[in-house]
Image (tube, rainbow, N blue to C red; front, side):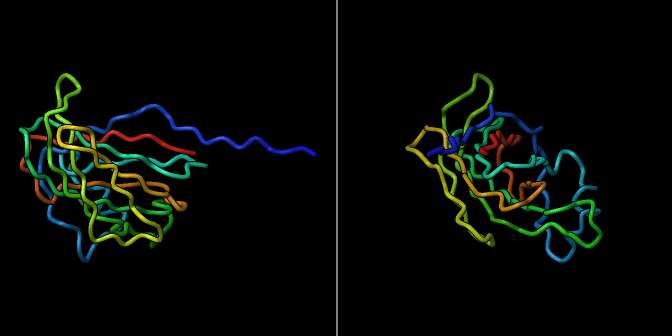
Length: 164
């Protein structure tokens, strides 16, 4: 009898550029053209490669302990397809801690809300001054856009790892 050896691997952490300017929540127009035309200081994008089953996210930035930031996470299946608009996946409320990467402080608590996704968006929140994050199944998405609707820190950077 032959059994396939299936393995799940996580890629190394990668980082987006910094979000340094708040952006109002996207309400009536979440078209690819509108979202992808936002200023680079207001939005970050994560391309999701084929065979990526899940994404793991953690958040850091130039911040003070206990700063609160609110991020909206949007996803799109095919940004090149006419009529395939971004949709809100969840809102994430971050509380910045004191754990540092040498320059930036990590969010120690990450609380998802407004979840509008077919699967759970799982918070990976530790204790105070730990490194919190989110985990979610990509379910075929090809791109993620993240904006800060409330930015009390100087900036927020999203670290991400692909799991698949």
